[in-house]
Length: 227
Image (spheres, rainbow, N blue to C red):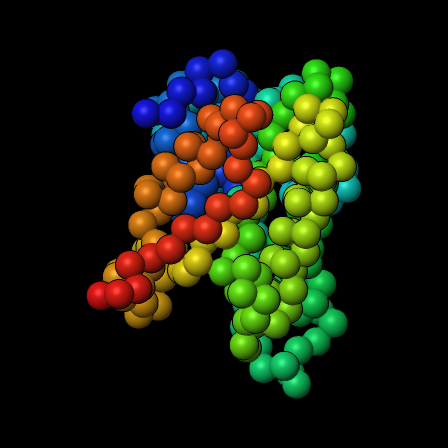
C-alpha cells in the first residue's frame, strides 16, 4: 500500500466522483489533505474525509490564488474539469471559454497558488488530469474539450521540465476512457467500457509515492476494452 503519511496533499474538485475515489486512497495512505471544492460537493467530502484545511473556492477566479497561497502543501492533485460535446460547426466562443476556463484556467490558478511554497522548499509534485482524447490528439465531436485537456498535459509537462532542477515535478494522468460513475451509468455507458474509479485512484497514489530517481511524468489508465 502507498504510504503518504509525511505528505500534505491538496485535492481540488473535492466531492467529485474521481476526487472522492482519490481522497479515499489518500486517506488510506495516511496523507494529510487540503480539500478544495464548491458548495454541497465540498460538504460531502468534508463529512467523509478528515482534512487539515477546507477551502470553498472558484478556481476560475484569479482571487483564488491568494487564498491558496495561505496553505502550505507538498502535492497538488487537480481534478477540477468539465466535459462537453458539440458539432464543430456549432461551437461558439462561449463553448471555447467554458472548456478552457474549467480545464486549463482552474489548473493555472491552482498551480500559481501552491508553487511559491514548493519552490521555497525545493520539493513538490503537481498532478493534472488530462484525457484519453488528448493523449490520442483526437476527440471527434469534442474538439474543444480535447484541446483544453491537451493544454493541461502540455502545461504540466512544461512545468516539469522547467522546475525539476528546483525540486518540483509534474505528472499527467490520462484516464483513457470514461470513469465508472453513477452519472456515466445513467448515461447508458457499460461498466466494462469504463475505468474503475478506485483502481484509477490507486494508480494516482502509486504515482505520488515514486522517488525522484524513479518518478513518473505520464500515466495512462485503461478500461477493460477487450470484453
